[in-house]
Length: 263
Image (cartoon, rainbow, N blue to C red):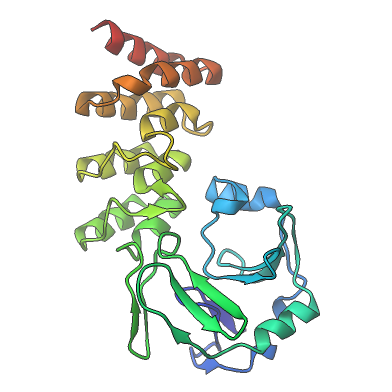
């Protein structure tokens, strides 16, 4: 079965990785859909923050998403509803295959009155095709390894020099490890000197995330917070973190925070 290569904007290849320029092949993906809860369960964030491979903005309302989890094409309205791709929208895609990439951050493939946007903060793949290189966030395998909970692959990506301070969907690598409730990967990222003071979504550091993440169990959250408090620079967030920890019933974490305040 042909597949969509999500290291580049909607390039379709056959089983032997030969490129297909006839976009009618995409018709098999029309009508395949999934619920918002499936997206949230996989990525751990709101629908607007899901790192999709390509996003086609049409008339400021309807957006066409290519989802790498199940190779489906979907449409999203401004009301955040996910539905199947219509035949008309598929036709619109089929009419725009070739274009010229612009240079710089936030690359855009402009095609007449439509534009394919490749947000370099949202895409963690390197695209090398016909001399065009998109460096993205300086990672290739790190985020997928964190998503998969594979600490061996996370370590290999770091050893290969991938950027531990990369940001995906407004969240750091450590933030993703916490969202996916993987304390061992979180500790590994801290060991490798990542910037633990980055304000995710310009609001909070990962200290608050340890308390807020419902899937990050009390003992694991506490172990990471101990590391963070040892590094220092979080005093302004301790009260807020303690409030959230109490709301989440994270007794051990609350104890760690109070001990730090009383030290």
